[in-house]
Image (cartoon, rainbow, N blue to C red; front, side, top):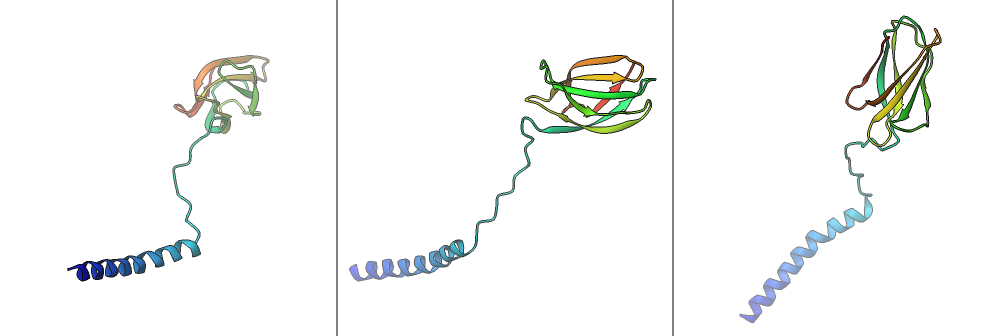
Length: 126
């Protein structure tokens, strides 16, 4: 009986060694493939939004800042009345930004707390 147990352990060790050795050799010879995951938008990234100028005056400049911040950044230059384009807007920590538009007629308009991740269209109106 003892001889059968030793024989069984020897066979199991031989089988395990045959299975594990090629797997080990394969992992040493080939680099591991990088894991794929969904890209994450990091805080401080940008969100592309569609900007439509519905005003009668041309837009001279559109600025954005994280809501409540005074760090304004130019995100768009001139945009004629009735036209649209896209702009990359810094998303900040929670996608809420303040926007400031300056127009050719000397007017300016501020909008606070716009969620650019939820609504990817900015309508500039009178």
